[in-house]
Length: 194
Image (tube, rainbow, N blue to C red; front, side):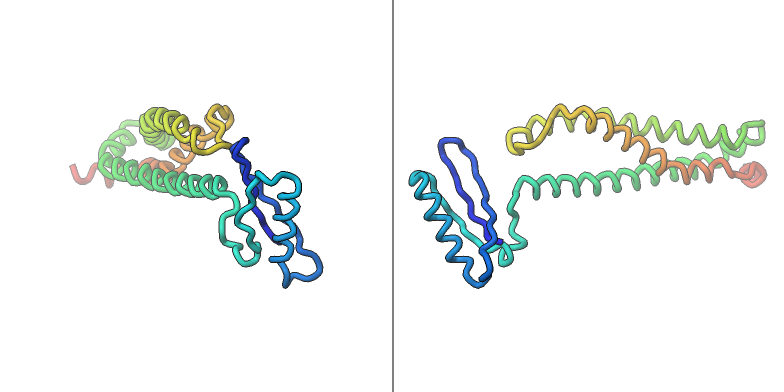
């Protein structure tokens, strides 16, 4: 596979052509020159530059916007994992500090399901407090990045709905293990230290 970039200053666009050099893969330079001559025959003002053989430059990005989008996606997944770990840590710490409270509640008749729900409610409130500035910052950064990433769709309603819901679901899952631990507190053990 051979790639040749063709630019047109009037349109401010770039076109990449990929061709199969034919039966003799040892002569990609000859195929590149044929493309250069063919483009020049159509319009001499169109510059042709950077002929390269794809198997030599296989790791060179042929779509810089795709590379940037992939990088942003990977950083988003990393940020989501860090947020889930943070929620787990905060809720776990809160549960360990409130063990006596949960023991007293259970001794006074609260159900383990009620304790589980109370801890998960705390997690949901924590996530919602983080989502509000997160959505506002994402809205602002989308407007800023819209100028540099051509294929960015700033008003993509499914994405704007799915991401906060996904973050909320991941936050609840991250808080579920500490919440379950809080629901299993033995009132006798929790009240023994009073």
